[in-house]
Amino acid sequence: MGKIVLLVAREEMLFQAHNILQEKKYEIASMKVIRTEDSVSEAREAIAKGASIIIARGRQASLIRQYTDIPVAEITVTAQEMALLVTKARQILNKPHPVIAVIGTRNMFCDMSYFDLIYDIELRTYLSEGDKDLKNMVDQAIAQEPDLIIGGDTAVETAVKAGLPSLFLSATEDSLRNAFRIAERMDFAMEAEKRSAAQMETVLDYSTNGVIRLDQQGNILSVNPAMEMMAGKAKKELEGKRLDQVFPEIPERDLKAVLVKGEENYSWIIHAGQTSLMAFAAPVSVEGGIEGGIITCQRLKKRENQREKERSKERTGKYIAMGDFRDLQADSYAMEECIKTARLYARSESPVTIVGEGGTEYSLIAACIHNAAMDISSPFVSVSCCEISEEKQKSAVFGPRGAGAAADKGTLYLENAEGLGREGQYALYRLIRFGQLSGAAGPEGRAKVRVILHFEENPGQLAAKGMWNQELYFLISSLTLYVPPARRRKEDLKKRMEEAVQYACQKYSKYHVLTEGAWKALMAYHWPGNFIQAEGFAESLILTAEKRSLDERTVKNHLEFLYPGEYLIPGKEPGIFLYEREIPVGKSLEKESIIKLLEENGGSREKAAKALKISKTTLWRRMKKYGICQ
Image 1 (tube, rainbow, N blue to C red):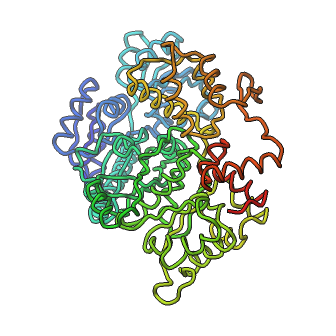
Image 2: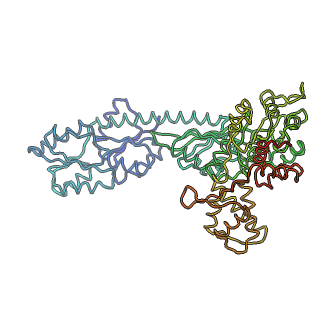
């Protein structure tokens, strides 16, 4: 049990306390009469001697509560005690309907709402919130000339000087007994909290999960031993720091959602040294308010350093994925959500479908998913489906010596998967569904492969047009990831272009700056080639620039020069312009152009697409549309 100390202003209250203690129901360690001006020093002395709870009244209680951290059980005047004081005041005054002023701190009194009616008096209450306003309350009460004043030492002394009758706010044993009960309940609650805290500390100390406790600002208050081990840092290195400083992968927006809005559905994959952790966040709510948060962490897998990656590359030859989620540019909300989803998908062994336009980071994301999910020595085999004819796909990709077999116990990444023909789609279905390679039986005909597919357009639309096997579509569509294009990621686009401009300036030993108008023109352009196009444009702009300051007109002229046939049209929003390509020439001429370019480039779809200024996927679709076989 804790040590309870009673501090009071008058000897009579000490005598009352002694009488109550004769009942042997309460345990008070020490009792003392103190002056109000000594309240704080007396309380601190009691604390130094081991006091855990102090019992005090009125102004003394307010001062102790304000300037120390010890719990205070306040002595509150009961309704019965106030009734006795009002009755005594009426006897002293001996007049009908007297005006009685009651002065003190609000924490001293019971509810006196109906005293006027019950005792036929005019009761005026002057109650302060703390010590500072008490003297003003006394002066205000005296200025309004009551018949009698009831209050503590300050009120009575001032009333005597003003020549007004007064009564000291004396108490009976009732209020003290109530305070003793409150103190003992507080002591019981504190002991229970200590036991609970000790039990929780034991649970945390021996927990295999890492636990981080946060305040409402996201600062780390404490960590358990498991978290120290996972982070590879001691408590003193972690406590006091902001969570997003220790783990920069955690978006500030998500952290605010937990600590400010009280949302609970947040989880992240974070990195601590060479360890990957799955972190779960939950707010700490007290009486409807958020006081902080708890982060629990589970170990996922050990990460390998670059030297180990290179050794793995030697073991697995060319089948290695070079990419980490931290390599991705994610200043925009759209890309933050994309990466967050990709991290979660990495935990599954099911196929992942990535939908992303040419020039976005879809291949890097595929490599990131593989590296987050697989052992670093596991093969990552990448195949561009548009580069392999439909006749060869079955053997080159899904045969016993094809890419699927090479990806055994690893990842098969199919870029531009819309280029798969019917036979290839069926072979892919059998590989995903049954682990079966095409045209082989027995152990050689099987492979355990994680499949990641990339499409430039939603495969659901291909399935609806009859260009994609519907059963295969439903097999691959449950984990679909949409990579936002540059036009939906203005923050990422601007940062990427700033880096590209800076790099080009350094590379060519030039110095140029872009005006605000120039940046506005760059951000308004819709960048059909996304980041690849944007980076190439930045290099070309800097390399050919003749003026140090590049304005809006310079940027627009260079866009028109590099991408002829495009023109400005007003957008839906005021002041925003979009750049759109003119509609290509007629179908027959387009078909002839495709055939001619394929012949000139030795059948290379990539070179033909580049000459036409379209993507390989678009070229493939047009070839199928016009019946051009290769």
